[in-house]
Amino acid sequence: MVSEMRRLQQRVRDLEAELARLQDENDVLVASVGHDLLVPVREPALT
Image 1 (tube, one colour):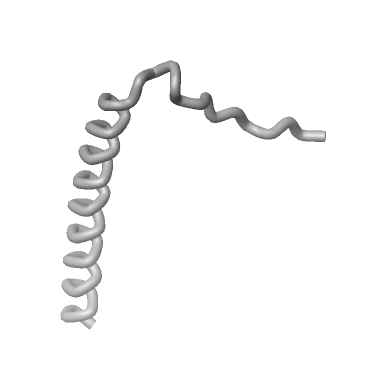
Image 2: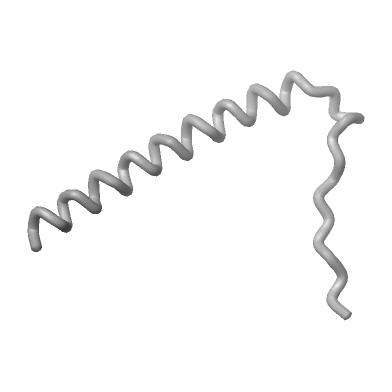
């Protein structure tokens, strides 16, 4: 059980690192696109 917990903790660390990398990459992409080209994200109306 301890080895499974360690494996899962490592997986969480790996996923957190990947998330940070993708967020950084996304920030670079957003900065390179003109803000007038960005479409605002709108939540759908509840009916």
